Image 1 (cartoon, helix red, strand yellow):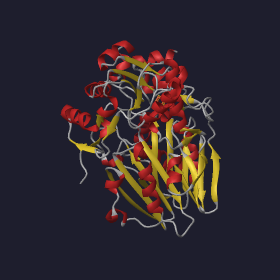
Image 2: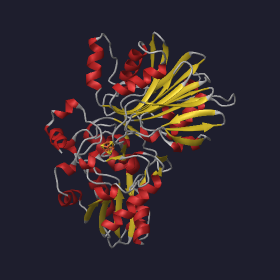
Image 3: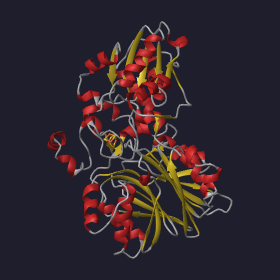
Image 4: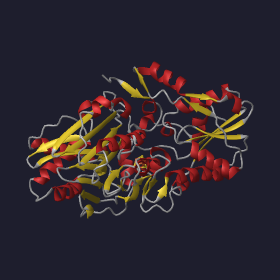
Length: 484
Ligand code: SF4
């Protein structure tokens, strides 16, 4: 039994995303919907490592395998044999900010209501969750988890009681659900995908032969042999059946859309294209812009694996300073067991090593994507100095985190954010760098120039395009933000 595992990146000083979703509507006899979904979840593993699940609709019978653990742990010959090659399948990988790893929140979540069954899998965060849940509970609803998917399922099932079809129920639900959600639904006879009106999280459509898929990221579509068609638009619902895909628009639209800029900086895979912009190009540009703002004299530029690597290449290109490998990441420490400070210390020690033969005696620029609490940065710089680096300069390819995220990224505790407690120079001193620089807000807004969507930078600026949760408004910091 998989128990009390903690993903190494997820519980260190790194930001965590909340989930990846995938769905397939199979129109080709020679495709296997279960195998395709399993392969796709491997490609989305970076978006969530704490549980994985697949639900398949096999001639109306909804079969599910889901469990805590990585995709490779949850799906093996035995568990996959419990699923059948159905017409429609949906899959999910989850990250949870909860230490308790609540099994009831594993997705896809299958709901049986008076009109039939649906399986739902979602990425994001519903900001009016408490209000909706209280209202439903007053009407007698009993919840088994704190998951957005369960709440969304209840709202859709309730709406279905007063509509003629599931499509209208989903569109009505999109009016009620606030915040961030990129969601797939396996319905009795169709696959549905929809994205909140701000478009906070990615969601796109692809095609394999005559079959269609919906995925959190485009890189997955290519890796399973399909071709990318387009992004699902903010506020759009896509319905796929045997005739192809059909587009519906939510009646409510946002004044300003709000795609998470941190998807470009850290979350998404570099081989994905989101909102018309390559994630690799955005990271490369962040590195180039870092050089404009911090032209350091050095002998070598390196990145922290994995998301700092491309920005380091951009810095090297702009500066002419050679790019090199500064750190080796132990790929085989995916998960570890235990709790508490000792575990964190062990994780830090075993995760990365500095490449002494490459850095000894050199002035090194290290590029990372972000700093949350500062523990990892301090450790990284110590590793570099112990390996003999003469100077260590730390550059961050995003601005300092100063505010929480309410839209699906695990930046909740503003008190733990080092940039809320210290000036840049104090942080530099704490982590032990010779110099420290963060990409400016102005520059980070340029990394995805050409994107066909507005960008959210709320955790860096304190300004959010979408309403932030009412319950959090009582928080004095949020009140301050709201006055701006
Ligand atoms: S607040 Fe930050 S992490 Fe959250 S959606 Fe906006 S940019 Fe992304």
